[in-house]
Image (tube, rainbow, N blue to C red):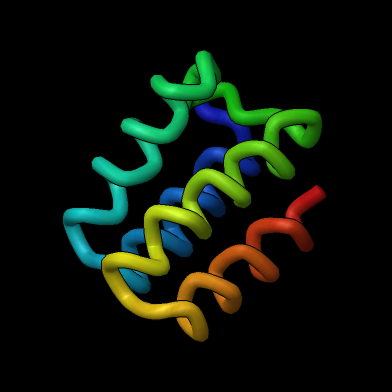
Length: 75
């Protein structure tokens, strides 16, 4: 069963990056040893920061910060 936080993070990334969003989440979760289907509140800070760093190169600092802030609010 997928956690609500996982669903919301996938939703944010799909909205912002389309199909690529799912792969970004999965890659960062793998790198951080987080199960992408079971993202918990305790994982949000590390994952949001990792995704922010990746998003800077894909979409620029402003969009990266917007996504980071939206993810941080999920805690």
